[in-house]
Amino acid sequence: MVSNMNYSAIQGTLYLKQSYQKNMVIALLVGVTLHLSALGSYLFLSGMEVVAPPVGGPVIHVGPVDLPTFPTAPSDPIIGPIEIARPTIPLIGIPEPVDDFDGDAVDPGALARSADIQIFDRIIVGPGGDGGSGYGSIDVRIPGVGLAPPIDSFFYVDRDPEHIYLETPVYPEMARRAGFEATLVIRVLVDVEGNPIKAVIMKSSSTNVGFEQAAIDAALKGKWTPALVNDNPVMCWVSYTVVFSLD
Image 1 (cartoon, rainbow, N blue to C red):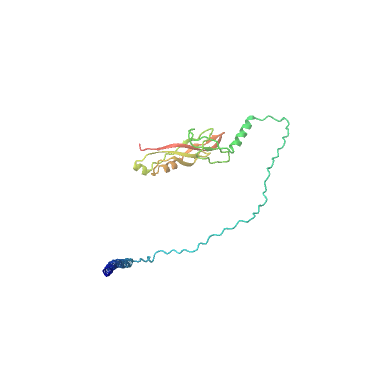
Image 2: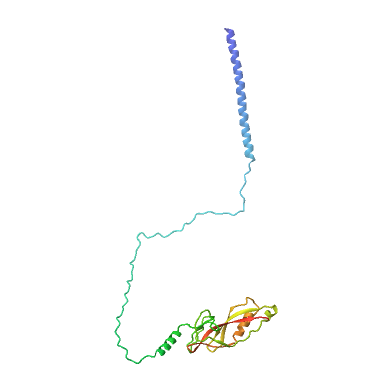
């Protein structure tokens, strides 16, 4: 009986001793783990560096925004009366009968001449160009009235202007020394007395050695017969060619 009790006591003592050692090892491992974790966290946090924002850059101040106020529409808009104009009816008179004409007979030629004068007084007429070539234009000139015709229109005249004398242009010295040649087309406005009053270059030499100015100076020194419409002298544009050649 006593032997059995001693055996049980010894066995219990051994079990408690083994459990105590096991619990001590577990507690030690848990403690070491907690300490290592705390130490690692401290070292990690102490190694971080807080970077301050740079000083001296642009500063933006954001404040409240003032929203624009819009006028509110009236609750009951007032609409005034709208007046609509009524169409007017044109009054047409009733023609009265005219008695038969019993006066003198009318000369058809006189009517034609009268009609010509009335038309020429307000309509531009005339051919263009030298010898009916179609260049240039004229304006009809009633005796005592002078009209400058447009340069780029085509008209009909009874007789074209004819040159009496054409001045020969002076060959530009710069062009002669450089060996340049050119062919120009010049348009001249001839007045009712046959005098050239304006000259325009229609085709240039595309150079700057004096061809154009020499042709204009010579053209204004010429003499022409005036263009005629119904035997009346009229102003007219005429065109001709100027050839500068060293041959």
